[in-house]
Image (tube, rainbow, N blue to C red; front, side, top):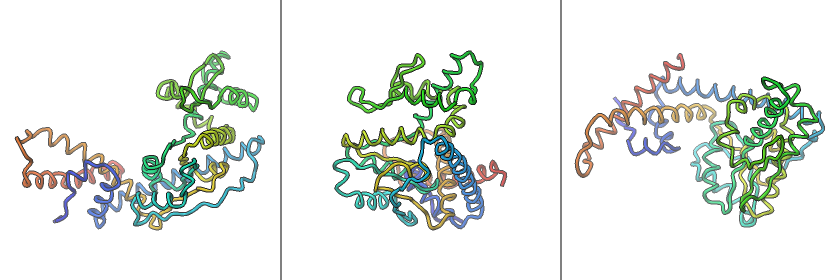
Length: 333
C-alpha cells in the first residue's frame, strides 16, 4: 500500500532529516497521529509542571532578597520554526548577532520542548568562533554535593533539606564556588567541606552519583536565585574573555541574564511538537530493530547492488510500521 519508503540511509542519520522523512511518510496514518498527540500532551504537561516549579523557585529567590522582583529583560525575538530547517533558524540568529560574534556575544535560546533548541544550539556552536554552551545543571549538582556532604559531616544518615538549606548555609555553599581559568580553560572550582576540585574533573562521577541526583530537585528549587546570579557572573567573565556563549533555558530564569541576543523558538503548528518526538522515538527503535535483522543475514561480497538497497529500504519501512504498533501499545493507546 505504501509506495514511499523510508530509506536505510536516512534512517542511519538519526537527525532532523530522519524525523522529517518519518513524519511525511506517516502523516496520514491514524496510529501515528494518535501516538503523536500522546507524546505532544506529555511534553506540554511536563513543560507546564517545570514552569510551575520554577516559578516557586524564583519566588523563593525574590523573597530571600537574592533576586529583584523586576528583571527588565531586553525583548525576545520570536522565530517561528514551522517550515524552517535548523540551518534556516541558525542563519536568522547569525544575521541578527552580526559583527558581535567576533568579540563575544551571549545568545539566549528559549522555547518549549520540541521546538528544536538543542539542534539549533548544536549547529550554532559549530559555526560560532570560540563558542561555549552553558548549562546550569552542573551548578545545581555542585550545590547539591556540598549540601549532601554537609549533612554527612553533621552526622545525618540521610539528606535533610530543612537543616542543610538554611539561608546561611546556602550563602556559605555559594562562597565555596568560584569561576576561574584552570589550565587556560574556564571552570567552576569547588573548595570547601574537604572538597577541592574543578567541576569538569567530577562532572561524570561525583556529580552524577545517586546521592546527588536524587536530591537535585529539592536543592534546585531552593537555590534558583543564587544559581542565576552565579551563572550571570560566569557568563560575563567568559564573554569579556572573547567567548560566544549559548544559553538554553526558560524565560523565567534567563530574564535575569542581560543580553540583547534573545530568541524564543515557537511553532505555529503545535501538533508538530508531538510528531517530532514520536518520529525521534520511532527512528531510534526502528534503527535498533533493523540492525538486529540485518545482522542475521550474511553481508554480500563487493558492491551493494541496487536491488539489495531496495530490499533494505523495504525492510526499514516495514520495521518502522511494526515499531509504530509497539510504541502505541506501550503507551496504552
